[in-house]
Image (cartoon, protein in one colour):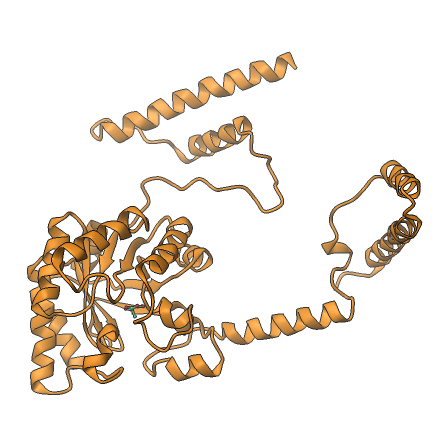
Length: 385
Ligand code: KIV
């Protein structure tokens, strides 16, 4: 016991020293004494020792976010200047955010496409700000590295610049996002983008096909296919740059129009259905994974989308395998029945059940002990495949 106390004290002193060194290196860049990887590992190990969180909980404990790793606007600018392509993928919940983070994607966009791919609506119009904020918070918990951009949903920013600023502030404060995206290039949208930038919030613009405007566009129609419409795409993107947007999404415009816009702008263009001449590309998570293989989604999956997987098929197969194994009483087998009760406790438990008059329950428990042992033994004897 004494040894444990001394050891914990030693570890505490060690952590404090490491933390002081770490803080010094953050506060004084000229004296950049950063932790070597072994010291970092030692710090994590030491924190673990002092933590009251059990090492292995049923669902795993919370993981600390790694500080100082978030992709910044400066890093995006640097990539753009170097001619490196910027990657953007949408996410709507914790697991999609974790996957996007693990893949090293630069920007995670909590798009209002959630309205279609998550909520099953035919358009992006119905999703509310409160619903978007729930998606934003879940994504912020899952993705610690990518820059997080939250879409302003339809109806949350069109009335005035102050409405737009208030909504943008909520997306950052309540949604945990780093920046916002808004659609369109009408003068009122440009003013809204300007006001949000002036409020200290980074803004991504969105021109070409702007799905929130299907009412006036007459449906999900590509833009920039006539001289007038193509020039409008370039001019709108320039206007968004002028008011301080850090990048612009170009959706569903012909390749040459995207190339002209990319060349005319100093900020990066992020294409979707706009061909290769953009500074980066964005796709919707479910579309790129081939996740929704059902008629509704087949109807709304755009033709420019490349499916990098057929995750939907895998989901279908896994679900029907589960159904079949449960119905045939194959699942759960011994390897998925992990919790044991000791022999003495089993005896005590059976006696207590009998005392309670639960004879059949006691018999069921006794036979389960026997069967589980038998199945366990036979599975250990089965040679590994
Ligand atoms: O809502 C969204 O997902 C988007 C992308 C398609 C750019 O706006």
